[in-house]
Image (cartoon, rainbow, N blue to C red; front, side, top):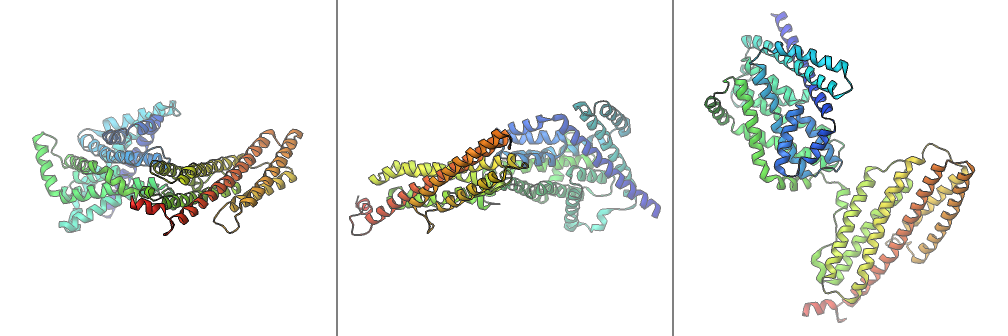
Length: 562
């Protein structure tokens, strides 16, 4: 008895191993054979929500891995190549596509002589791999070999579960009823998490139910658990990803949880209904086929439930996983209802420009001090400034369309000029950081190193002093410091040209260094100009506030009387 148990456990482990090996070979081979086509299809497959669902289903059934498609989609969202609302439809479709494995197992694995085609497929596949392993033909060889190994694993699992079914009923250990259903949901979930493949878990469940080891009702519960467990791959892939990628993974989890919950509520009704459908269509009456049909139907049902609510889901997800950088990109003070109140409007505009200046100076200081390529924070700050500058421009346009005092007509262009200066600073900061890697690894003459360090230090100091809210800010002093910095730049540039011509520094390094310090000088110039114009805007705000104080014949009073 003990020997038989060990033999069955060994066969079970070997069957799973062969199955997983076959799945990996098929998935990797199909992805390699597809080449850039997989990326192209993903990029162009979401022009409409329905097309996104169909593409997700097709691609997942093609590569036999919902995890591969979901993780690839997360990668596109992470890189900003795909919008969240488009990507979520691919996730819907991938859940339908993953049911293809169940149909493959139920229709092929239990109805034909597996060894008759599995072994030749392995032989042909390995032959193709040997003669052309670095080409697409070699990748197709992997697919063929994986296909054969996949079904050999199914055959071993079938034989193992057939022997196990004669001696033990696993469901009897669970006690039956709702407790049994919940236990099997947990089993399906754990199998998928451990193997990182819902297809593998479902294949095991199908072979178990075909071997009479697990009753149909409990096997269906395990399929629900496997479907929920498939979200673990996506969840693990977004640990250090962008907020949008985390939102997509969150959408995947919500979709599978709700779909699983609905399937659980309707479990007895669905199984009875599908049994009638199976008989009406004269389909195979095997429990494995019914289980594959159940898996497909409840995933399609999930898409039907979520499809009309996609926009609401995206809005919900967009409020989650927020970062300080994303919050920076949202205007805090601009409110279009303030257009009728000039004092409040100019105050809001000034405050928002000060926020943009704070981010721009932060970027400038980081890029001058950085010793590698731009980090995520720098790029997120760049995006935040772009959005805020666009919001300022829109707010300024709305103010121009309203009845404004003459002072604001003159100052609004200056406000937009300030926003433009800060936008230039942000763009230059990224360019400075991008040049930094090309300046690593080679030594420069000591005097050039010292001059460059001093120039950067003085630039950072000036940029810091252009904060008009700081107690040290002075229009005159900043202007004088800028002129001094320009003179430092001219001297440093001349020194770089001399060292480049004398051969003490490579020409390429000389050019890159000059480009970098030129951009740093321009950042300082833009920062000084922005501070000057922003100071004038502040003065205009103060004068308007004084004019609007009670008893001064205010414009606000005039507006109220009108």
